[in-house]
Length: 178
Image (cartoon, rainbow, N blue to C red; front, side):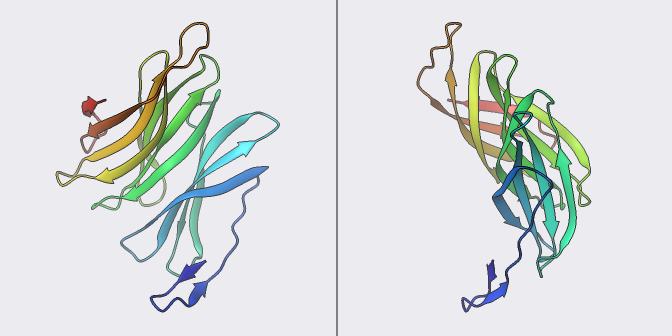
């Protein structure tokens, strides 16, 4: 549901996707007055999740809707979605690899039509990285904060740290702080 400044409902739409489970995890305004939303699409039969990004106009009508399966043997989760000054859409989140039981942060950059420009993962072996809450920085790059922890070979998990990562416009890691 979208409300105007007086608290009145402007539109109330239900959006569905051909999946067993989905739910909007994040939403952002776009410069054209519309919205962009990021979803996790989970299939209980396969056990894997993919990303769904949807672009809406100011009335809530769907402009486009695209699914991104970033890693076939993984579960993906969206934590943040943004539109930058050039109209690119950035999707931040984490990928859980079911083969090695680790997870990495990711950033997916899309053009205005939802086509992938680039996709990058950030993480270290044996670490799990969750959540990636992002901002656009004054220099046109991106920064995001998340949490990470360590799992040893016996499967024991150790406390989480807060990570802050700074990226340039092209997704190159400039620095990382714990």
